[in-house]
Image 1 (tube, rainbow, N blue to C red):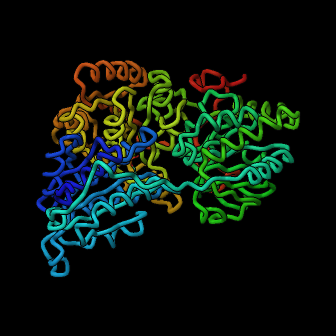
Image 2 (cartoon, helix red, strand yellow):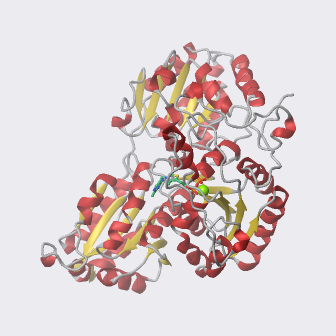
Length: 592
Ligand SMILES: Cc1ncc(C[n+]2csc(CCOP(=O)(O)OP(=O)(O)O)c2C)c(N)n1
Ligand SMILES: [Mg+2]
């Protein structure tokens, strides 16, 4: 039997499970694992500048391609705690990442050893398994179980903590005959799908709410086929955005309190039946449940049994992987169509399309300082449907979801539930590592950008090119807006006179200089007409230098973005689109 260190066995299993990339940074307690990675030679390691960054890179890496599992590695103590935010983000959005940490030797764990922290307990609520492996011979089992859990049921992260002596201990292990454990995914039955279709048939104004579970299951094509077969309008959630292309005739818009379209909310409110697939009725999607549910029948399909009924009781629940459910939905719907048993939805579909063609927000403003809406209009012009967007949180992200267009699954990569500031840059880098051939455009507010700005150096060092649109209002804009409810503007403004950079006009940080200092290219624009040319220039710079290129747009300091607390009372702060020229890049042209 081959004999090797437990760390060598761990790396051999990573390889057999398909891992080709890791993100992290070493420290003394994880050096045996790094030594094993070095001996193996088959894992490309991206050295982060901050361990939290490594964890978000792993998440971006997973989310870019079906089947990927991002791996992040750090030493004991603060490296593990730094990655907790990454585990939270991944857990909250049902994304598998494997976090590997070093640890003090087993015999010293209880002695307050240097950098010994009980990371497994800290990570427990954020992972599907968090284990400090105390026996070297358990290492293969722990890794096998980790992959089994990450891939089974509702996907999510796992943490494996490896004491120093456990990594170094020799064990018998045969990588050749190692076999990944079977993956468990609940599957809907035909009877369940038929019942849900019966309920859909009884409805007059049905919609599908398409969640991130469809993206995780790589089932966007099946969703499209099912929607087309039954002629049912689709409302994607923020996590499901891209499952149906934005220019599809059945795309009804997103609904919610913030990242939503006026027509999306109106269509949900006009519907009488909602089939939720792979979604979790997030509170920023539903708003108040009384408004969301009144007068509607609900069917909820989810892979995690305890998700059914968690937020409200649906009229019918199905426990299933979204892909398996959709395959059956397509099969049974096709039979019913052939038997002439599917309802004619023409009038309802047309009604939804009319809303899309009339209820638009204005994007075309010529103001200086620039209004944010104009930035997204210019981005819609500059970036084609191949583009993948990466963003985190803030007014910037909310407006992006209201105004940008997404045409493919995995082309809107957003930390939906946790929304940790700083996520955008490292996540974008992880996305670029996973898929260097698809153009990546990240979008940050100035504060999100500053949170993990050091990771730009990772992009420069490892030649990970992407475009980073930075919308700078020198404000914690989203929090400024939410403080209106407290009648205050307190501890949220970021502007100052930069003694080194009078040219930034009191906006404080000179992002161009910082980005350049970190090895990236950077441009700044202050007038609306400059945005388009700057984005084109950024594409050229990216191709030439193969590094991240930052395009900073100096915005007006205060712009309130549409949001509210109920689907039927989202507050609009700007003029609405009245003519085509008001929203020239809307997918469905405004009827005027
Ligand atoms: C770690 C963390 N702390 C605090 C918040 C709360 N928060 C959400 S958005 C935001 C302000 C973001 O400012 P910026 O990135 O400049 O975006 P803007 O809203 O101005 O577009 C804050 C503080 C958060 N999401 N994450
Ligand atoms: Mg800001």
